[in-house]
Image (cartoon, rainbow, N blue to C red):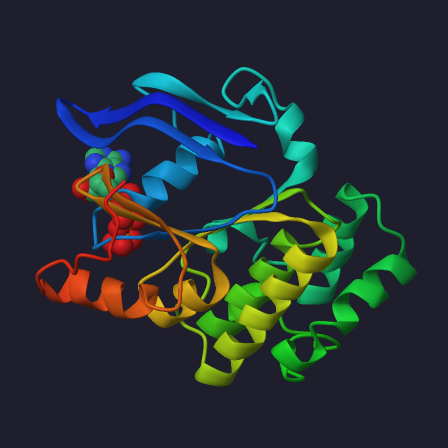
Length: 241
Ligand SMILES: Nc1ncnc2c1ncn2[C@@H]1O[C@H](COP(=O)(O)OP(=O)(O)OP(=O)(O)O)[C@@H](O)[C@H]1O
């Protein structure tokens, strides 16, 4: 479980994130949407202790993330390409991360087999460095590494961006399968509303650093989100939390 308490991030005097209270339960597929600059990456960076909160704190399984490193053992993340190591090949990088996650070679092969279709023969068994792959293929390497080793929490910032449509479908399926089989908690941000609503069980909208909606996914959520971002008057059924 992740708990956010009185969390504020400000740069100079500008508050870019302000969340009084937010709890994400174990096994939840939590989708975070919002316009450019809404604060999605800032929130994920705070949960991953990549930036320091101005006020408040985040706990992951009861551990205050800016006071202890213990949460790192059960957390996988991909925010951007800085999470990979550009001068390794994908296979070298997978072996490196697998080692950190106590996986032997056969665990690694078994795990990566599920990514065969997603990789589309562009990633493994090549001599290319990660930095020389296309943007989409670099992202695939980072995503596969983030989900590796049965982490209890996986945080993915805009995982669908830069992926071709068939890769987006495959990624949806990989995330759903891992969540169903391992009870993984996923926190996923994005701009493609159909991907987020299809994968996630709960959707939160951030606007200028604040949560303006927090709703469980239902059959009508996609339409309601589209209306929200198109500026259409809010339907009565869209529950404001
Ligand atoms: N280091 C920084 N210094 C000053 N302002 C920053 C810094 N990092 C982020 N911000 C500001 O914080 C706000 C939130 O940015 P953030 O990247 O979290 O938004 P986002 O929702 O992820 O946007 P996008 O959809 O464009 O990726 C923006 O106004 C941004 O300019």
